[in-house]
Image (cartoon, helix red, strand yellow):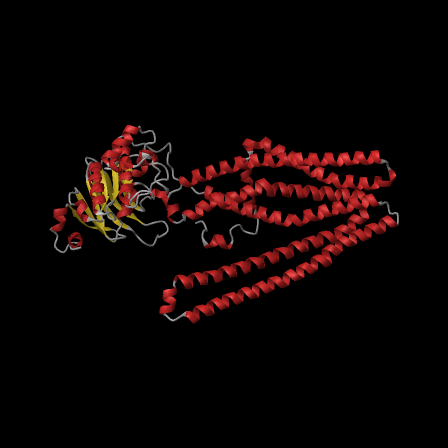
Length: 597
């Protein structure tokens, strides 16, 4: 099981890079293949840009050497060369950024598409234990982090490595003695500075978290002010807030103390190291140790470049580790087994669905193996029959429909369609024979026409209009200015509950399924909407095999067969009149309870 939620916050990206994580990260490079040449050109321009940067100190040092030794013509020549290097560096940087952006955007688009395609094919068992927000985070936040990595971080890391290696090589050429001295003091100072900075950032983050905690106390206290006053707890809340703000002071002062130490360190050690290198360089120039003033300027500039690059490496590597962690999370999802929607060795249902037989079916959900939702139940649904499922919450009504749709498979027994085990049919062909109208209708954020035609995207306007008419939706749809092109809003928020139900019924009518599953759609509607929806449902069920999960028992009095469920077992079954005749029967008691309301 994937570790989401709090585990994610605790250690989202992981500090250690294992071989397995690295292998997963390298899998990303297969997404670069379609734009491989752009990636190669980007690397070439990255190398050229870095090389141009390394040329600058050399030209500046040469310019200094020629101040007195050469005439104005030589100085102009060097000046023009410097200007040319600046122009080339700008051009190289532009193409480097542009080519890496092309590669990155193409790679991430394909990665998002593959991730979404994989997620949408995962079984319902996965979605029952995973929050949608976490999945959205994988597709958005983690992939956005990869965008930063491949657009900026990776290029900058390579650039800094080139500058470090090239710079140190040039430093050795200029002066081996001064290079050894510089490497003994400056890099160590830079690395210690990076460690200091990282620790101070952690303390700053803790301060922000403590401030956020104080804000929570304020919000809770004022939101629940009636409770605070009712329990005379003003002093308690004041103490809570005071303690929290005092914690902020303690952490903030600790951070300030270390920032002071850090500032002192920068002034004394880092700047001192640089001054020490300059002092030793001047000493070598003065003693004629093969170093002149121009070479010293070159050396100092290269030292600054190398030191800056070494200092930035730590943050770049941290960003890269985060990206590797994000990649691991994405590929953990990609490695999960999807539903076998279209498998060659599975049979496609070509005939209409006839009888559906439950044979000693038992079931428990994957995350609740200790709790049997269905316990050895058997029943038959005849072709064209309306079967109603009745029972309290948790009795197993929705589970039966989930098994028929093969969102899950039974843990015991068998479900047969047309005298064949349901598992012998391909999932796609099976589900295309069924439609469901749930109690809480989810509409997609497009137009009314798109929502009605969701199960049949190639439907004509006349077919959509006919389905809407049969669903008693024509009047309200055509009252809108844009009619069928009216946008329903996120999750259908622009429509009322009754309107959403009728859109869902129109969708099912257009889909024309062999088997219709209805999770009582009228329980939360006003009287007028209930009448219209119920009338539409009766038209939809006419002559069609239907399973109705009944909450309002008055809607199933005419059902061909009623199953009364309790604790995962069928305790009563029959027609309405037959069940009413059972003395002290559960169904009879439920009917009496609802009739007295």
